[in-house]
Length: 398
Image (cartoon, rainbow, N blue to C red; front, side):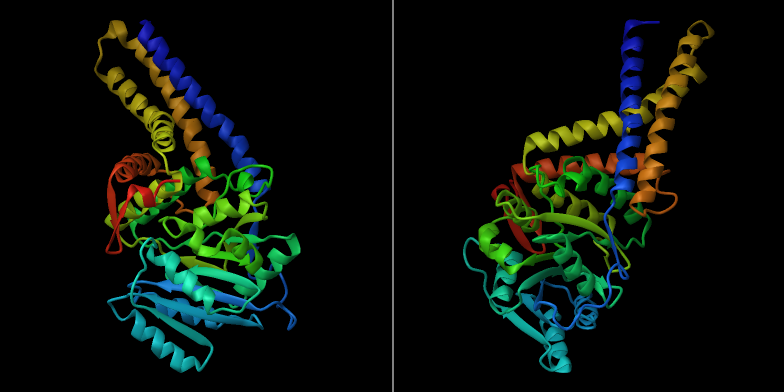
């Protein structure tokens, strides 16, 4: 057997060992999984602290009504909802005004006409919303979120108070309707876990910080200590930077999954998913070093095994009899590595509640994920446009 084939197969073996070790990580994730359900806590009492819910919306006419209605339908006894229309040119502002009239004082609407220098839109809108609020707790949500039960606020506030959490991020259940959503979303979630393992985020002894802006609940004292959105006014991924500042200042940061509380459909098309996840990777990883390491890991751990299997099978079918024995060995090794990889991916897909067949399309998702990381690297070196606004690399670096 040639030396290069020995090196190649040894590399395959090391990749297989890497995936085998991931079984232990999956087992720990299942064991330590923090999950909030609609029945995790009883209904909140009348003495519950005042809560302010804030949502910023820019060109969200398709989702904002559902978002606001499902939030106004919560059973929490003491809360207010403040919606900020951030310079929308569609019907978002009109829809919010109609809802405010319908709910007669239960919804406060703020309209933003101009964006001050140095601010990005969402942070500025949220800051204005907080200035109108009076809650002891602040809950920041995205305009494309839909509450699927009436107890979301009751459950999350009680969980935060019971566990002494200052900053709670409740991860969304992702609504996926199209083929490409079901292929891309689980793989991109796995890429995020490379750097933002929930167990490390929840451990106050580590520096790892993460929050998902779809649902962030924090005490007003924590928000003020961070410096509010003014402290992250120039960052595209303001949620990540708020989490980082909170943890650096010693506040208790915690992320949990939800089952039956709320969901969101992030991207409805392939192009939107590609652009959106590229932006997220760019803003969350924030450096060429992290993006480069992520790309290398994706290619070596997720693409290389399948490519090796394809080469081995092709050579077994086409090579001469004198060399076929070595290629049979290569085929056996690469089949074993891919089998181990698949066994981990099947368990991971169940963990993230992906489509039952998503493990089959994982190689496609991994290749697309690598492409999005490359796109993120290009954005970090230049400019990107999101929701009609152009951003430079200084808005995306960590």
